[in-house]
Image 1 (cartoon, rainbow, N blue to C red):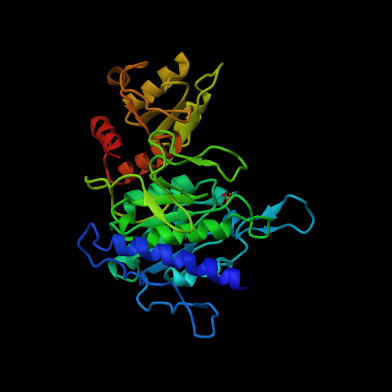
Image 2 (cartoon, rainbow, N blue to C red):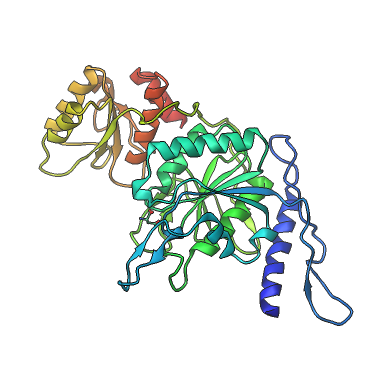
Length: 384
Ligand code: ASP
């Protein structure tokens, strides 16, 4: 019991030091209050260690729960199976001792689904809720608990529709809440730590798992089951977090983020991803067009390339006004405009550093906002 107390207090003390160090916020808005940096544990005269009082003016963090493995529970009839989206937001908070000493917490259950079922409706609800929370100054940061399968997509979407420099941090886990060594509680603690520090402001939406902080545009899942699954393949993580400190590897970007109004209704415009492979014909492209796709993202081989019949079909679609973006299935690097394929001639757009899933979301946002000229679309991919 004594050991537990000291660990909790140690985390609070370290977090306080960061908050104190960074009290001036980038935006000039009042920064979240810092907990006192003086002795974290008091020594009563009887020699026993007791916890420091919790400061009244802790940073305010709202936790929005959407489901995922972090809220998953084991199946009674399977050694490895579990069902995602079972535990509630409050259950998740209760599993992290001392979380209420890092921040003043508020919890809202937005959905309770596996993120393989994430959809436009939940995205719009989440984005509207977060913008409202910040507009009403109800929180200094928001943490979204989420399944890891599509966490990078939701992060990218929110990064482009949240109109505030206050931080949004998405967090998940690779093991369900009932697993041995469940990673959810530690990840949630890290996410709250990150959202609570003033230095997180101006960095848009982030993803925090396994002690690592990633930017929404770069982060991607790289392993089906490992707790060290998230990577930022093009620029690397933007920081790290442990029980004692939140450390960003550089300052927040100076230029404003590319943001759009939250779309008024779901579903968002249909944009399909066509996955390129050896021996491919134009069937997938023609199917997409037949189902009314307004945009197609090519998950191309290599530098965004594909087989000749597919190139012809995509170019034909682009000339009829369908937006066609060349991304890559490779997982890292940038698709170079007019290199392996001539975008100027084909009428296509190069995704640059965005992977196919994120290219699809940007294209949907551009379509909703009436941005359909390929040159302007290309510019938005460069700005994203
Ligand atoms: N299928 C789960 C989900 O994305 C996996 C996870 O959360 O890790 O909701």
